[in-house]
Each structure stands twice: as C-alpha cells, then as structure tokens.
Image 1: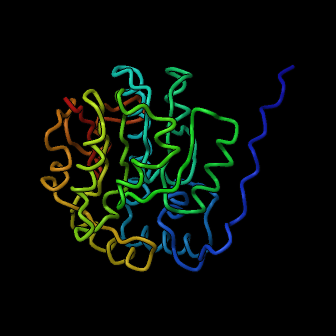
Image 2 (image 1 turned 120 degrees about the vertical axis):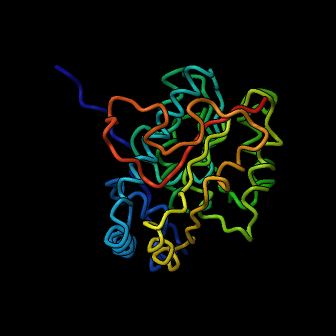
Length: 271
C-alpha cells in the first residue's frame, strides 16, 4: 500500500505592512498560471489584462515552460550547479531548485525577490533545504544582491553560475538602466557562467497591457528585438539564439503549429 505524499509546509499569511489593495505583478502571474496565492485585486487586474490582451495567459505559460527547458539544459548539457534566480516570483510546480537538483542533488539555488509575500512563501517551501535560499533583493540594485551575505555564503563566484532573469527586466524602466543592471551582475560571474533572459517583445497586441500595469506594483516595458538582444552583448548565444519562447528548444508539449507569443528568450554563455 502506497504511503501518502508528504505534506507541504503551511504557507504563511500576508506579512504585516503589505498593501494588498494594489495589484501585485507576482501574484497576478501566479493567478495567470492557475495558482491560488493571489487576492481579489490581483485577479481583477489580471482578468482585465486578459480581456484586453487575450494572449497574456499563454505568455505566462510559455515563460514558465521556457524556464524549465532552460534550467534542464543548463543543469544537464552545461553541467551548471549554481543558479541565481532574480525576480523569482511565487513558488509553483517545477521550480528551479527541483529541476537542478534532479540533475545533481548538490546543486545550489538562490531565489531573489523584493516582494515580502514571495519571500515568505518561498522560505516556507524551502525550510528544509540547506542548498536553496530565498533572499530579499531588488534587480534594480544589483550590487546589493551580489554583496548579500546569504548569496555569498551559498554561491561560489569562482565557479560558473547561471543567472536567471525571467520576465523581470520588462518591469525595469529605461530610467532605471536595465542594461547596466545586467552588465553589473555579469561582471561578477566567471567565464563559463550563463545568462537566461525572457522579455516581453514590443508588439501592437501588447499596447493595452502597458496601460493595465500602470496601476500595479511595477509598470510593463516591452522592448524591441534589438533592445533585448543588447542584454547579451559580449556573450555567446546558444542555439537557437534569441527567439520566441516556444521556438527555444521546444519539447513534446509544443506543436510546430502552435503560434508564438510576443515574448522573446535566450540563453548565452560568458566566454
């Protein structure tokens, strides 16, 4: 007789001081993926985004599945054993540490987010995992992330690191210098490290999305192909390069006939 699966640790309540009256981009993303860690205002805002931009739910799923394929590639073919996931969002199924530790149980993962709800949920999930931590940090302040004691304690910056920036840079405005942010992070990583980025592509279908996110915790800034490609300057993109997410090393879940969605992604190696 099979024993019942182990129970997950109970998720914490909303941390004190968190304003749940403002739509939160992490909780909206959770809702778009079918999660339950979201509030009425998050669902209302996400539903309005879906009403005005019908592909947005497909974009969310394409991004999540791209994350899984990219981490499997990095942990398998590239044999990366250290991962820093910035703007990690709420835990879901097939998280980075779960995929990486299937390839090697000693793989180490740092999740970074500035949202206290994300951190509370992640820390509850990771309470028994000494090789994975969730730390507070804002992608707009890369030097602080690199200097964080928990990050430095878990990650060996003399060995290759996979830097994951999935669906986060399009929430960094031009005035906040996103390309410099990425350059600062990459400068701390040794050769053999890898950069993974997914980013909303500037497409007419996304124009209403920009307006919808104006009232959320972060604005949305879709960018051109050239602007997204510039994040990889000085690196070597692995095949198939910077492409629509469904075209990046598709698996059996993606049919050749499936239309792509306006979000691009790529994986590159620091030489």
